[in-house]
Length: 268
Image 1 (tube, rainbow, N blue to C red):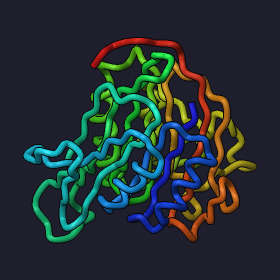
Image 2 (cartoon, rainbow, N blue to C red):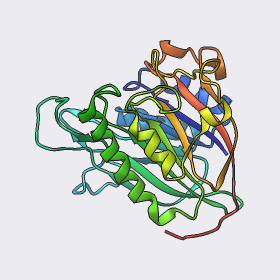
Image 3 (cartoon, rainbow, N blue to C red):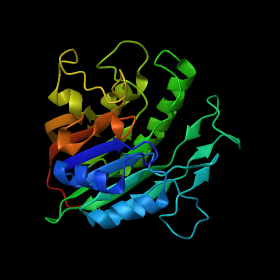
């Protein structure tokens, strides 16, 4: 199973360029963050011929792929996949109260996407694409707690699928407790619930392989559960898969390969 997680900074990258990176990476599961252009989202889906789910829609919206706009921003988390989508669910981006612009003091539960997939061989797996609360460093207790609350909610959403291979991918806006000290609670929470960090599993020495994805931090991840086995992972620096690196986004993508167990249920 080839996976790619990429925050594309409000579609800073061109559709054709992103399609070329995805093709060269071999990814059959792609999670996009900050894909805030609906026409581009539709275009990349058509360009690749992938199935897609856009997260963050309004519950009152009739079209299930129509994303919700909050505080002036269109905030879907996009899942692209070669595999059949058996079932999917998207979650609204909801603030504690209405604001005309983002307020770092207000929790913003950004749109998320969960999908049950079926491969051509009939194997099933679950993917959750997320983008956690963006503000506050690891020693900022309030901001860290916001992200922790979000990941706790996501973990509950995944509970019905715990018997299946599961991936959690996206921009977590937090460093890892495996890389640095201080209050990095989100990755520690996932670790305690049986989820492993693909990059750090395949690159255990954080000094020689820091895996930075955003400036001097590693905040973009592919996590997997016990029904997956790690094979490899890399950060998509300039030159990897034809990428131009930071010229195309303020983040670098994370690519990975995993083996998944052969599981055929549940159906929804």
